[in-house]
Image 1 (cartoon, rainbow over the protein chains, first blue to last red):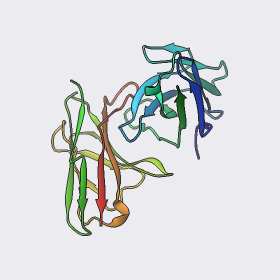
Image 2 (image 1 turned 60 degrees about the vertical axis):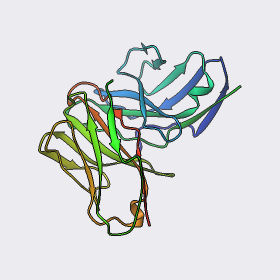
Image 3 (image 1 turned 30 degrees about the vertical axis):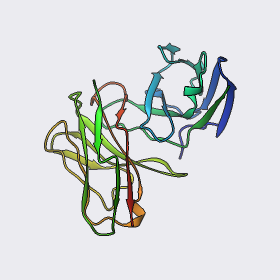
Length: 111
Length: 113
């Protein structure tokens, strides 16, 4: 059973913010939200992760709702190079934990 | 540069001819893993290793073997490849503790005829 639900695709204009939603209504208290992306057929790339507080790094911001049942990845100024498949993953930390990649959301950034 | 290196990047082979896809990381990571990616199925984990001499099956281990004799290397072995193993393969590594921040290799595209 998938732990996360993402729409299959979305697009945004270059230079605008891209807001990628993710639902994870069954998330447990010790599970983090991770975001990775895959550009074309390259290896997936880590973007950001969080537990319950909003997080920001040089690539993106992660907004997690107070009940933790959903989150949004924000790319503040999307560029054409941000066109990729974005994976939202919910998983606990620890030596035995593994990341399960679903189908993700395909973001298309248009000129 | 911190990286995961896979070789070969592209390979065409025939059914039954043993092959090995190598994976090496220079970050001293304890955890390493192999995934395969197929259209419509996403990334599926084949095998993983918590540390040297410690390996375990992932979700789709049939037809594959792995070994972890050194910390930096985690080769994927196809003893008798079949056409259904035609796929894009990724190796990844991370620390064994803390966040699941995986570093992936560039991928190895394998075709079995």
